[in-house]
Structure formats: structure tokens, C-alpha cells
Image 1 (tube, rainbow, N blue to C red):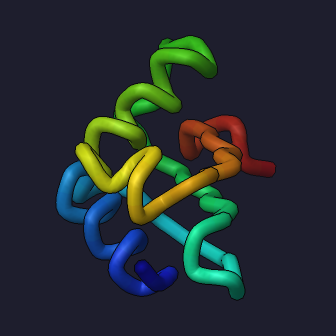
Image 2 (image 1 turned 180 degrees about the horizontal axis):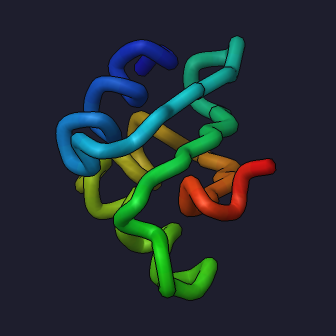
Length: 76
């Protein structure tokens, strides 16, 4: 698994999002996701939305994914 593939999967599932993924070892990644879909949602709800875009890759090809999520109005 690589950062570009993860970015593409998140963008496909949350097409209104801005996504940046880092990670050099192929199994541990950090994603920063900004999406209007996150407005009014809790952190847990936001993370579940992102995890849903990655499906069965979570816990398998993607061993760990750190997430930072925000709605556009939360970015200063």
C-alpha cells in the first residue's frame, strides 16, 4: 500500500475532500482530511467516514492510520 493509493480511495469516497497522506514504511500512515461532509459530526463519526472509504484495507494492508479531520470552517 502507498500514500497515493490511500489518498485516491479517500477522495473517491469523500469527493468533496482535500486529502494529504504521509507514511514511509508501507503499513503505517497519517492522513489529514478536510471535508464539508464533516460539518456537525463528532471526531468518531468523521473517522468512521474515512475508514469506510478504505474498507477491508484497514487492519490488513493498512496496519495503522492516524487521522486528523476537519470541516472547512474549522481551518483558520
